[in-house]
Length: 372
Image 1 (cartoon, rainbow, N blue to C red):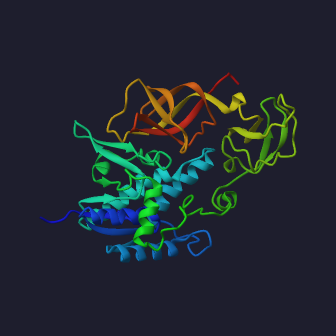
Image 2 (image 1 turned 120 degrees about the vertical axis):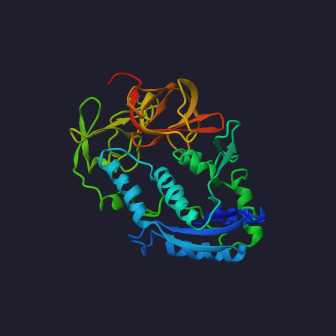
Image 3 (image 1 turned 90 degrees about the vertical axis):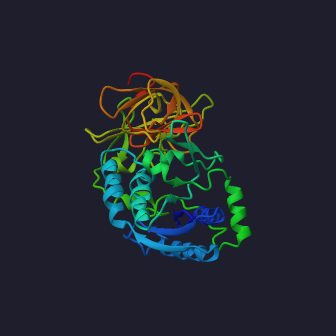
């Protein structure tokens, strides 16, 4: 009987490298696919595509699998980067990793893998897939809660999920590192990548300045006092503390007499005003509800009115919420019994039923704790 062919996304990082070895050990015919998704500044200090390709090819040689490189830069620019810029120009803060998974890693990549005769695809994400009793595929959190990446995968559909393997879903990161070292993989000690290639480690404002139009405007408190000038609304995100430019202003002190830091609280696109507040728990930073659009259900169907758990940003612990669909097509609302901090339009609100990721949507607006 012929072995099943799995096409694995290999990034040059330790996770996908160990995944390649695991799949081969499990008896699959493995083909590695290195995706080149960005070409601008590709030779700069901030984008490491060449080094990543060398690492991926070296690992493939050690593990004993074939690997090829494929260029998805055009698809990435059209489907991910263009949306990224539209969101920032609209005053929101997008998460390009969510869109990249849906449009590139599990769409363009899947299509290419099928052209290579793949029965299945695989990635080095920390997540799990399980078959439900009714035949649907369920996306589950990884066993290593500190590395779980189901949040980024919530926009996949049932057809994509049914053909996907996540070999690392049952492992902890420490075990993955141990395996890489034991195998003598050349990238065993390579640091995890932070951020997306087109930004890399460069100053974010410097990068965005090249692509997004901006206009300075007033920086104002909820009381209407102008305390400074912002450099352009696109360059700020809700809850931001560093880089606001108000470090020298100490107009408010807490009960201990200590100066409270400033935070970005709101953006008013119509008047080009950035609102800032002092104190981490200022009411303008807290929300008891949100609405989301562009909803997508990896579970195959939208949940009804129900008590569930949600994340409104990656790295956040699950929080209790009540979900209900809205009359507007493609929209839902969440209500939180405990106020949530800096709920940010453009980020994903992802819903969970225990360890099962149901899907989610893009945050459109948040309801404040008190009327403003």
